[in-house]
Image (cartoon, rainbow, N blue to C red; front, side, top):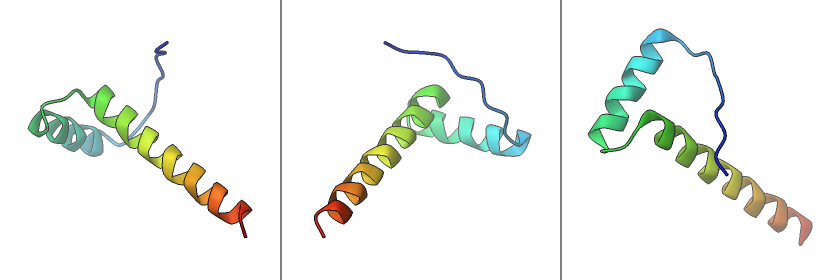
Length: 53
């Protein structure tokens, strides 16, 4: 299930992010979602590695 969120960011960052998303052929929403997903996966891997020590 997908949910909407609202964030507040600097206007120039938003503009640049929209350009980046367009360059990558995706939407800003998909770009942000992918980055968050990647960060969460990395954090989970870190937590698992730390637990194994």
